[in-house]
Length: 292
Image (cartoon, rainbow, N blue to C red):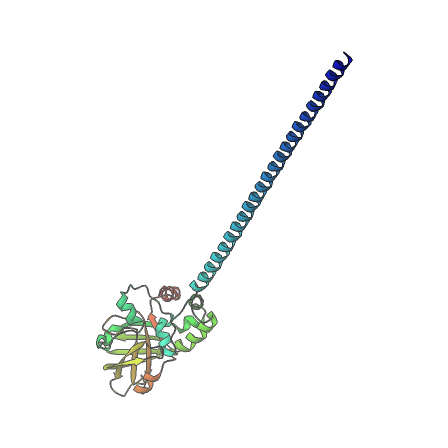
């Protein structure tokens, strides 16, 4: 009986021990599985951080690239802007400058494109025609007194806005060009009367042809020449008109050269006394000059 009881206790002890070992094994498995799961989760989180970081770097790179692109575009625009301000001006010299700038003598008369080209001194020899003294008939006043009293200062300031000289520089240039002591000229038929220092002198003039002059700037002008008839008057032997015209047409202003030497007058290109209708006020002449 005692022997049977010992065997039963032994079997029970062995079973208990075996049961305890199995539970420990399951616990170790669960622990290992939990550890593996945690490690896997951590790995995925690390991978996610890496992708986010890469995405962030890519975004930074894109912004940097966009910034560079904007900088490049801005530079290109700036360069283009700089080139767009490359202005050129066609200024001539001597009498050519006077003609190219129209001596500042603008006008409100409308002109076709061809007439404007001729006015500026660009034409063919075949376009030049003879003219009669009647094209300049009328009562004319010199603009020189208006330069002296400052009336024309507005014109010189206007020219300086786009020209190559200062207002004072233009005034100096036109002072030499406009200078004269003949303040009034009256032309009736073939008779020309000069008013100088309160005195007058008259003579009849006959047409003596025209001369085409070449200027340094490349443009040209035409002088219409008239010769005095008779020797009794103190009036000049020759008068030469330049009004930017090359064919019969009533003048609205003109530049006049006079003297006794025909060729010497043709060589004169720095002094060109200029005349406008006597019924125009100084302000009206200013507006005429600025309008061109």
